[in-house]
Length: 143
Image (cartoon, rainbow, N blue to C red; front, top):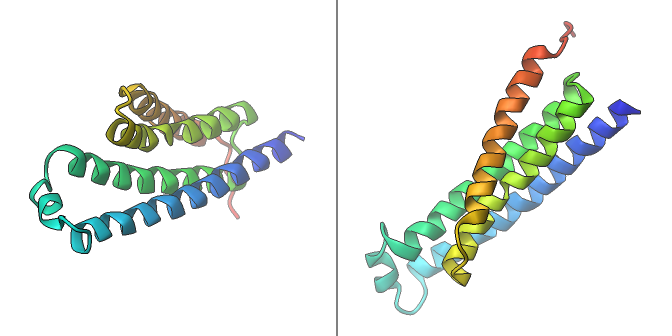
């Protein structure tokens, strides 16, 4: 029963990670359109390292990174004998970490405060630390 829940959490992280990856890949194509084809692209290029342009690239990079981290979390939850409670928390913290790139986009496009950015970043770091400790404590056997 506990293993089934760990697998459900692992599958959730993989599915969410893949869908999030697709979303931020599409966002990357939109950024390419803004740089190469949009009217006023010269203004967009001129602001390459500052302001909204920089923030949108930051969201794109972190969105893809956090998607891949969630895929990794899910895969490890499926394959390693991690304690069920640790697996659950690592899974949910990894998913909460995706608030960071969404928070960056909310800042840029909606003028939102950076709370989601901070919460997502802290959640992802906590997830990685907890996962590292859980793998350290797992009883691994030779295949």
